[in-house]
Length: 202
Image (cartoon, rainbow, N blue to C red; front, side, top):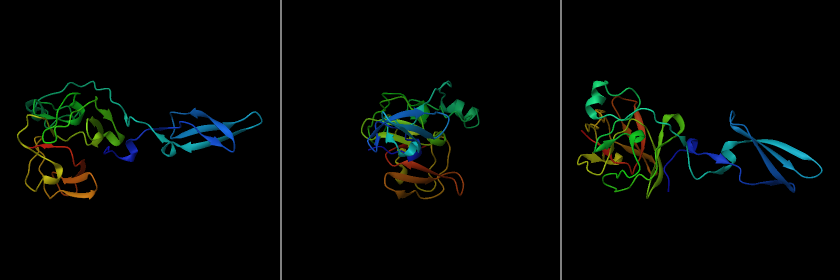
């Protein structure tokens, strides 16, 4: 089971046939369509197909070339709560982009098994040993194994404060299976979080 949005999945044609003709693939990385030539010895048929209709790859998202170094909570607050790089990392807390293979999440005991990848719309994809690929917002503080103050998203209540200083202003709710919506900072600021991710509290 993986908990990711369809927009962060990557697709490709593995094989195909149309009216007895086999396909030859002509990709164009600049657009969201793939050209397919169905060819035989007599004639060719060319079609364009949206990438979303193709076979899904095993690895979602795109490589994330991280050039920023990680920083601790003190530097996080000195930067007035980060510069948008979302590279906060301490022995007990890590934002998703700063996670490393071998990190263990508190509560679930799940292990990060690959370097983070970039998902759609700046999200971060992390691969856990039991759940598989998980997609989440880069600003969230994940509780690592030695963290003693954490809650799963569906346990958050009004008044809880995340380790990064974000105030929870309403009760979490689950609009769909495996996802929990948390209410942060101000009215209208809601973030969907995979239900299996433990969030670090102040």
